[in-house]
Amino acid sequence: MSKASTWNSSQSMSITQAFLIHLICGLGLAVGIWVAHNVYSINLISHPSHTLCLILAVETPIVILLYSCFRQNPDKCSYLKAVVRAILGLSVGALINALGAIALGAPVGIQYLPKTINWSLLMSLFTCVPAASVFGSSWVDWQRIFAHTK
Image (cartoon, rainbow, N blue to C red):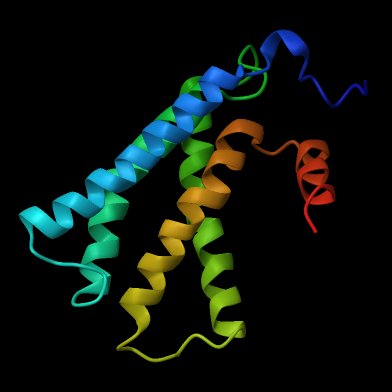
């Protein structure tokens, strides 16, 4: 094990914990969609920007607070630092997602901007925030993540 990687078996997450985190995040998503449909009478077809914003408002605290509990090396990284890293990861990931969507053909224009921003934030919430809150700025761990994706 290298010096930069401090993750060991005593700090690893159990299967039950991983299942519960994903279950809670999935339930948060379901609650956000339910509230949008039943309380505000909006959906992704009729009001996509408002619906995405509402789902984002429900899901963001759940994802950030849950994944920050499972930060790598909690002796050196406080819970608050992991939350701040997650918030930074949300904004940086949203920018990367938006640029990627535009590069792949998403419509560009002021009328599409709120939809693109809200979509990018939601995608960043599910992709970048968990990794940013758990791994932070550990370049070795980010390289390990990218090495296992194809």
